[in-house]
Every structure is written in C-alpha cells, then in structure tokens.
Length: 222
Ligand SMILES: *Cc1c(COP(=O)(O)O)cnc(C)c1O
Image 1 (cartoon, rainbow, N blue to C red):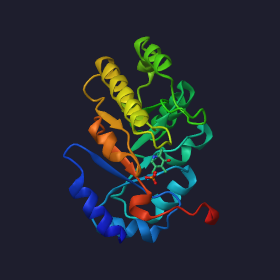
Image 2 (image 1 turned 90 degrees about the horizontal axis):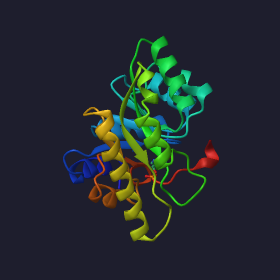
Image 3 (image 1 turned 180 degrees about the vertical axis):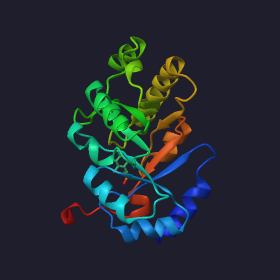
Image 4 (image 1 turned 120 degrees about the horizontal axis):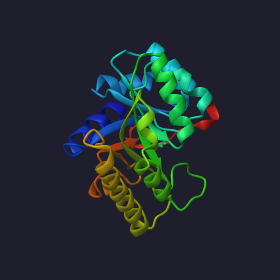
C-alpha cells in the first residue's frame, strides 16, 4: 500500500485520543512528503543530525519528535524546534535539555523512557528509580522542560502475554506518576508496527509507527 494510503487508513483506524507519530527515520524526504500530503504532521526520528537536516528542508508545520536514545552533546541540534522528546533516560540528560531549552527561550515537552522489556540493551529508567526520583521532587528544579508522560518499548517477542504484561506495567507506572506530576502529564507513548493494537488496548495515547507506513528500513544506506 502506498504511504499516503497507509496514513489515511491508520488515521481512521486509531481511536480518538490516540496520536500517530509517523516514524520516518532512515527514510528520504520524499517519503515524508507523501505522508505529509495525506495529512500527517507528526514525525519521529532517532538521530539528532538527521532530524535537524529534515527539519531545515521540510515544511515548517511539521511537528518533530525525538524518539531514540539521545546523547547529551546532541541536544543542541534539536533544542530550537523539537516538539517532544520521548527518550529522557537520565537526570543528566534532563539537565542539558533544560539548559538548551532556556538558551532557545523555549519550554520543551519530554517523556520519561521507562525500561520494561526483557532485553538489557534497551534504555530507560527502571520503575523504582523513576518513582523515587519523581517523588523526591528532583525534577521540579527544571523550569524549561514540561513533563508530559512516559514512553516504553515492549520486548521483541511473539509471546503476546509478555507484551501485554509490559504494556500494563507501563500504564500503571504512568498513572502512578500522573498523581505526582499533574494533569499536563497526559501522554503514554507505547506501541509500534508489531504491537500497537495491543498497546492501544492497554491504554496507549500515542503510537510510534514506522515500517507499516514507510516499509522496511534499509540501514545500509545510512
Ligand atoms: C524505529 C522505532 C519505532 C518504529 O518502529 P516500527 O517497528 O518500524 O514501527 C518506534 N519507536 C522507537 C523508539 C523506534 O526507535
């Protein structure tokens, strides 16, 4: 199916209250423009420099999300324009985002990435570590970031019960943190091509979908 048709179909299929992030990493600008012409405005990328290049040449009403692991020395590339950073995995990174946002006279929306998958390779806070951090008020000192919710990635497995259990854990952690961080903490980013229907069943408010829209990624070209 063509990119534009995939967008139209997904936009109709997603329940009200679930936002689609079209994950365009590695794909060329022309592919993004096809999705754009079908009405898509939110795009997710995982490399700061690639994000900056695409931001500079594509329409300015595109809302860019950073979804991949972010190194502190790369924050400066995206701080002037990024709409939401899904992948905040440390206090140190928050400190830098806060500083770069201040330099740009902005308040940047962020999600805490929470680690629930079995794979050790995935980034993110562990549940207890994050709860303690938030309850201790450690994050209240940052005036140029706004805490909007959490992001999580389920294990790469065919075991549906395992995936469901991980999404349910994310939903629980989200609700617990919301109690401390208030009503603007409203975003639960979970679900990708292989598991987004289940993520939605478990309470996702934002799905990040790449290959279903744009086809397979070819990392050899990068
Ligand atoms: C690449 C990526 C996605 C999209 O994955 P697909 O399986 O292609 O839908 C979603 N979230 C993150 C964090 C990613 O890195």
